[in-house]
Length: 126
Picture (cartoon, rainbow, N blue to C red):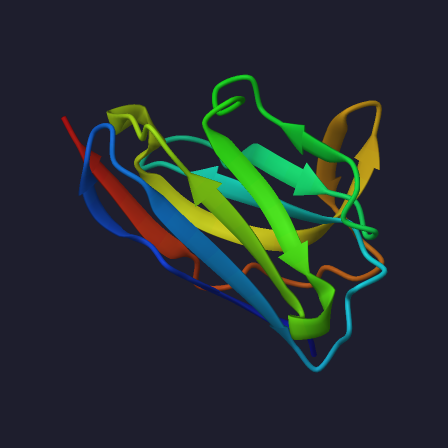
């Protein structure tokens, strides 16, 4: 079973930066579209960013556009989320998953996705 391991979270002050990583085990997912999601306490999980398998086209939620950058290194089976100018509302547990992309929206790919990883916690203090 494919496992996705997220890392790189931490506690920062507003305006700071963090870079998250997501590594897939037991699967070369270079051909898959990948996405980042987040869930804050008491809120539903929401989409953050997505990137096509080729690493070309990227997609962002309006709330993070121009602040976050998603990228991937297929040779390392890793995707990244560079987060700049962090805000308190970015505080959440962040997850990655293979996704289906349609009309600029994305959701976990049911053909590949089985369960969420442990996520990595991002805490932004104002």
